[in-house]
Length: 119
Image (tube, rainbow, N blue to C red):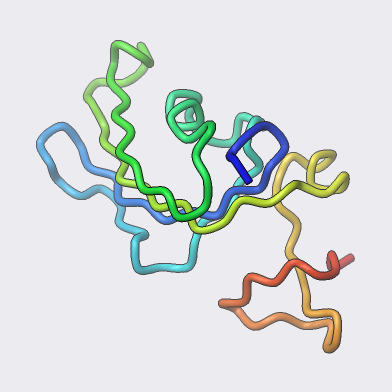
């Protein structure tokens, strides 16, 4: 499945400034999830991920030429871990909904299961 509007994208990333200094490194952390097309991440970053699929790696550079509010360039090394269709509830809320295991109704902190939405 490709990253597109109304998909939930799970990714890891490393953000660096124009000097190469690491500002945030989530490469070894639990993947971050967001609803693609909801405006929850920088538009230039979102555009750079559109059309990719799970397993893809990319580098997206965002500069003050793209976003006038930026003082510098930022580089995002990104690994896309998963892409899935968003549920109607997620689209309405504008963000991913925590999912739980069907058999237990609970989910471990590092679980990424998508069987039943928790109310």
